[in-house]
Length: 388
Image (cartoon, rainbow, N blue to C red; front, side, top):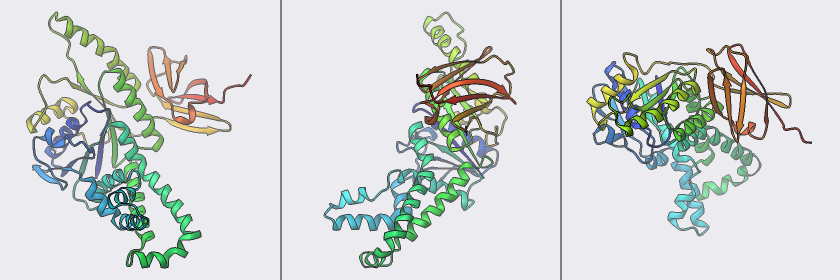
């Protein structure tokens, strides 16, 4: 089973790239599901078909789905939500407010992931291609398994001290419903889901970028967050690249010239990941024929469902009072390293190589003291600033 999740800033073309990847996977004979977790679904528009909350076959070996989060919440969270909302109503909260307040923040993300995991577990499909929400929402989605497990641990500790005394009362209020059993069952599914999402043989995460400053910065932040949670990135799609102008049109020449340094920055910054380049199409990419053509332009004859890169893109470890940031740069062999710090970003220059790194929160208040190349990786040591 393979799960491939495309993420990035809104408007970079995640939906189109996801749909194109799914068509290529299906054409290779693999039972493929392409699914949108974005609340503002646009997958159906890209595929030029009507979709529902259940997988719908739209081509040989290809199914598509736009998840209905509310239905998923009712299925996975129903018992506990019913209990919590009932308790709130007894306290005088009106019906609508009680239903809303009974939801744990982030439960919509958990519901979306559990829907996909259930189909993985049941073996319905060989490949699931996920068209994710914009970066911030996707990072929250991927962090929810950890967050939910944290809530359950807290609730279990509360249960040990107090909850057991309340069980007789709860059974009177909600007969036939074991609240903690419902929570623990959901937690078991969430833990299994996390193992799947972290397994590089199953799951791959692919940022979609464009040669633009703000888009690159957001993708860098996504790379940092994914690395911290241990989610494996195996490639980057650079979308909407302008061809070299064939006329003296000053507008097109200016646009092309503006893209070129950002394109080089993408290749430098995301090394050693493979970078797939997608040209800026002169027409709207909608429907099977256009999506298949796009898949050919991005992947050529490659199978887009294979794992293209394994290994950590960055690693933060603590050594005494200091922290060590390690970045694999296997193709860089020059010893001289220059560093420039601007807020939460660290710029590394090694010869003609330049890379921007968005620092994890734990490193932001610290100072970058020393950098060196060791065993094909750049190591940067961070320490607390010296107080005069």
